[in-house]
Figure 1: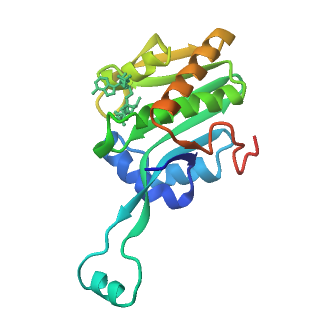
Figure 2: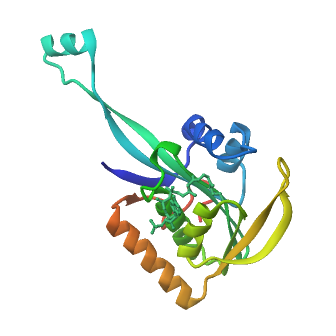
Length: 206
Ligand SMILES: CC(C)(COP(=O)(O)OP(=O)(O)OC[C@H]1O[C@@H](n2cnc3c(N)ncnc32)[C@H](O)[C@@H]1OP(=O)(O)O)[C@@H](O)C(=O)NCCC(=O)NCCS
């Protein structure tokens, strides 16, 4: 199974929004994603994609066999997505989600490691993010990547008033090395093609 990390395109939006709606309350709309991809001056959106083989069934399979045509088609599917904002010295993980049917398979980690490498390549000084205090799965992932809790934002999530932890990792030379080491380790564990983390944004050209 080939995995590819690449920039998000407009054509990805329906699949992204479907993962978004299964992952977040409140959820970002299609328009938010359209803005991030096409208008924002600071947004580096990413998806993790795979190619899934779909068997041909029923009458179509028989017709293909009679005509000597191959059965089965290959369809690309998204396993997750993320968003990184880069403003001056700050990089900000704006969103990250893996497909609910494929959690716990390192896909969220690949997305985070890719965004961190993108932030390092863009010469950010530090990376920040907010996470629900109840979201221990995501917090474990961030701790693994050396984020620390630096603050608590009371009632940050307006739909239910839950608090957020502010988490942050400084991109010191020592931390950069550790983070790039983690990137290399996850690349080795779950190989993926990376057309994102060291590749210029197609519109922003940086
Ligand atoms: C958070 C999220 C992106 C993690 O992605 P994932 O693909 O499920 O996780 P991965 O398989 O990549 O695991 C990476 C790390 O996360 C942590 N983790 C993953 N699943 C976990 C679980 N069930 N319990 C505890 N920690 C877990 C571990 O630290 C793990 O590292 P390890 O494999 O070395 O133990 C995913 O659960 C998700 O999309 N959640 C809903 C959206 C969300 O909460 N996003 C974060 C907003 S701040």
